[in-house]
Structure formats: structure tokens, C-alpha cells
Length: 484
Image (cartoon, rainbow, N blue to C red; front, side, top):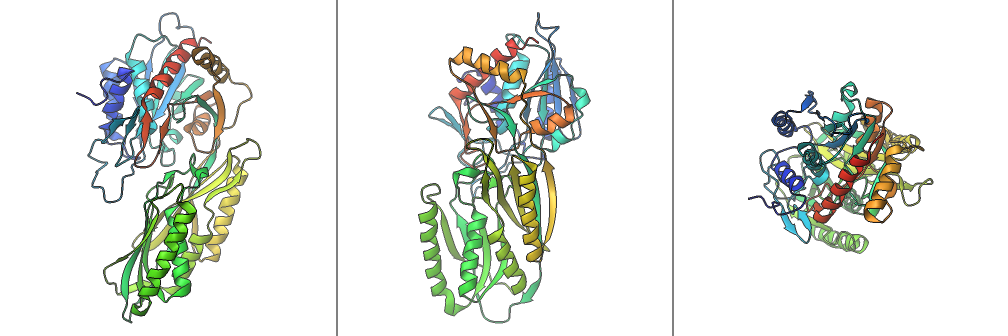
């Protein structure tokens, strides 16, 4: 018996629970792809798939809709795989563990994958049923959205005939998105250079933990603490006051998630330990004062570590700490065009330590290409000044607002008729595949909406049950009214 068996709409929650059992981290969507193909075969639907794990399933129009234009229902199959520190959960093998509490489906230890598993579930529920009226449906399931929108970028648009697309990858009921930010992923790269440790030292880990984290686009304006930035600030404070060696540093796990934890291994002199501990107490006090309302569990810990015989050289350590402190992070500016919209932002998502390099992974977003390029320009200059390499790893365009949109106008009318309230139309400071699909498919009319969910991209991600029912009802009424 499924945990969601008694929830309505039954088939939507049936498929959502089935999807939570399928491993589907970005770049690992083979099993969800097989699930979708088997669904298409079982129902006798025409389907296509490709080597990027994209799947298209086509269902013919309901009686009376044969002469209407086809529509695309679209969502992505991958999920951000984040878990609590110390968790032994294995995203490659384990089904997502969740509970049902207070009208919410909650994954407390990991991400839930409601982003965007609930879209897949709603589309499958529509495809399998003969109850709903609709034009021909082309169900588009794209892969690896969360890491560079790889599936959408490599989609063969010729497999699709529709010129109207409903994207189900938004996260607030009653809000429809009609444009989104452009984005860029970039790396600032330091080559490791070592010195031998000759004098007697004690070795400790500096650990930032207890942060909530969050979506680096839609939650960047909340003022959430970034673990990598707090660690960099702590290192700068300590290195300016004490004789310290930096052994290693790493933090964060996803470029598009605000990092929740970060750590550095350092070597210190015995004579400085008590003073360093006092400085740690002072830094902790400052962090709680600054972030206590939004990140009340923020902590900087100073814990004993294993002995080491080599450290990063002083020049590299100084340049690395300087770079981490001055690289832009968080909201860079608000929009001059849309009130309340973030205009440009940056997120230091990962500090990666490999055998030979330390790589700072940044995620940039902006409403205008020029604003994104301005942050990138500053980061390139910082890299040069700090004797580091600079590389752009991924780039995606903005989804620009259309003055004339049939699907937007129809959505507003259907929502008003259904709810007696106004559908909020907005632009978001996050990337949606709509921007890519406009290039891949060609001139296409699009809108994006979805049910309310929270703590997306973080452990504790949750989905509002009643909101799913409301949005699904809106969706089936909307597709019934698409008669052009």
C-alpha cells in the first residue's frame, strides 16, 4: 500500500510515488527513461527517445479536437540530489524517504524531487486517462535540466509539431511564469602548489555547518548564508592574525544550490590554539547576529584533524582566500524593469578540491545578457589578479517576454473562471528550459506554472498536497479550452 494512496488526484500521486522510487540524479536518468518508455509501450503510444535520455510520448486528440493545434506538456526527469551531512542515503539505489504531514509531502533527510517529478506525474496521469478532453498531446520529458539543461539543448526539435508549450516546472500555485533569466556556469581554477611542513603543528578542521541552503535562483534574494563565503571570511580573519597553513578546502555540492556546509583543513602552532578558539567564538557570535533570523543553526566549528606533512604554499593560500572573499555572491542588483525581481546574481556553489587543483564553481543569473557578462567580467579580473585560471563551463539564454501570447491570455481567462481570482503573471530569476526550447523548437508560445513547493534543492524539500490538486485541475481545464 502506497503512502499517497488516499490522496487526490489519485493517479497523479500514484505516479509521483512511483517516481520517488526511481534513481534520477542529473546525468543518471536511464531508469526513469526506461520507466517512461515502458509506460508508452503499455499504453500503445508513439514515442521517441535519444542518447541524452530525453523522451517524447505522443497521444492523439480527444474526439472533437482532431482539427485543433497540438500542444506540448513538458517537465524534466532529473532531480537535485542533496542530503544532510552524515546521511548514508544512496541516491543511486535508495527510494526517496518521505512523510506526509500538515498537507505536505516532506523529505526530511534528502531532497524530495518534486522539482520536477510532480510535473512528470501530472503528465502521465493525463496521458493514461480518457476522461480529459484535449488536442493532440506531445509529452516532452527532458533530462539533465538541473545541470546545464543538457537534455533540452540536445533535443531534436523536428520530432515535435506543436507551437504551444505548457512547462510545469514552476513552484508557486497561482503564479505563471512568462520569462526567465539567462545564466552561466564558470570556474576559477587554482593549480595546487605545496610546501613541506617542517615545524611542529597541530591540525584542525574549520567547519561551517547548520545552514538551510536553497535554490540559487529563486531564493537568492532571501539573504540565506553561503557556507563557502562564511568559511572564506573565517579563513581571512584567522590568517591575518595567526601563523596558519592551509592544507585543503572544499564545500558545497551543487552549482545551483546555495551551499549548506564547507570546510578547510589548517595547520596551527600550539601557542596560538587558545587565541584561535577565542576568535572562533567571536566569529560565531557575529554569524549568529547576522544570520540568526534566517539561518538560526549557523555554526563555525574547530575540530581536531589528522596530521599532514605538506600544505598549500603561502602565495596560493593567500590568493585563494582573497578570491573567495571578493568574488560576487548573492544579489548583485535588482531589476530596473520589473519591481521586486532580482536583476543579476551570483552563487559560489562549490569549492572543489582535486588532486591537482582547487576549483571555485560559480553560477551566474541575470535578466539581461549584459548584466550576466558584467559579473563574469569582474570574476575574470579577480581570477587574473589572484593568479588563477578562468573558464566558462555552461551558458544558457534568457526566455524573453512576448507581447502577444495566446496561451498566456487563455490561462488568465481559465484561471479566473475556475478560481474567481487573478492568475499572477511574472518573470523569475531562475533558468527554465523554455529559453532553450524556444531555440530548439523554433517560434513557440509558452507558459510555465506548477504547484507550491518549498526548500527546493535542499533536504526538507516539500510539496503542498492541496496545491497539486488545484494546479492539476487548472491544467486539465486549460487543455480542454485550447481549441485553436
